[in-house]
Image (cartoon, rainbow, N blue to C red; front, side):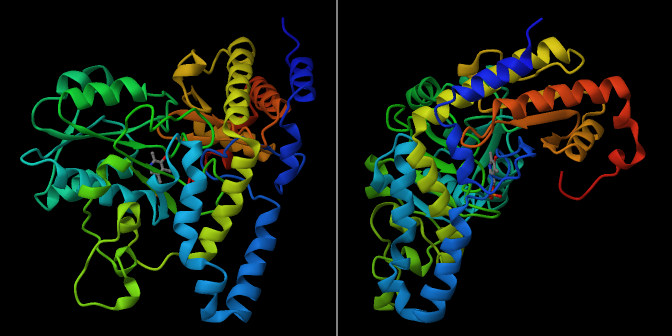
Length: 408
Ligand SMILES: *Cc1c(COP(=O)(O)O)cnc(C)c1O
């Protein structure tokens, strides 16, 4: 039998980016395996927010739109996210939530596709992605079609305007082959929109090399932008001239401060801005993005794979009662592993009581996420050994662990 604890110690000791855990405000005793849902707080964020609030807002007041360059934050942060997803700086902008960006980009794609109305996705995709298509369907603008992963290619007929997929599945961790599916969709005359919420900052993403058309992504998961941080949107340069989206707010106008009665879109992704950007949230997001960019995507990806591989192997040997439903091949999955158990909810709550934070996804999934910037191999080992202990002792059966909260 492998001595997993010794193995974890060995891997932590030789981890080239282990020092970056110190960049986050995390209790040393905490095994935080939920950074794929809400990233940890960077130590530099409170000071940055304090400076923005007291200095830029309190002292600078309205002049800070210019003097502190608040007005440029959406593009400036977008340009920093771009290299994490294989995009050009001018192709990414930070705005709104992922859901709202989905609305804008699904609409934009439909407007580029004369006569085609079908938006193709898979059943079990993240709910908001499916709901946003439904909203447009309710307006008579789209037609939702769902096909299982292995039937997607066959479902790409002449009616499909857009293929909308989440690159890394939130529940199973399965990762689509972005390059191949984008090519197949293009051959069928469809455009492609990738949701990178569970990808950016943890797995390799090459929007440019994949010839992707559109993408959206989340700021509060692996980018550590804080609760409700704005998301980002990507539009390939080749589509900028034809880009048109219905949320024609004044911040997406070519000249917002001309106060014209008529809307004229700003060039490129600037048009995706709608209302005034949330400067406090954006400032926090910039700290998180700077941190990820500073560590470098290659180092993050390499460690993410090792963390999940360590955990998968240790779980298979030590806790065989919880089968892993994520792909075995690290190249085919995101930075997370999902395990099935009838009492996954109770097990998850009992783990949390022992300071091992994972999450539960209905109906029966215990999900462990590996944010490579701050997760230690020792944290992964803790999850495995505490699970073993909970199952052996039956402690997870205590009634308090069965009580359900509003957010799981
Ligand atoms: C987290 C997540 C979102 C979040 O959407 P919001 O509108 O920012 O709440 C969207 N899509 C996927 C796939 C996600 O994982």
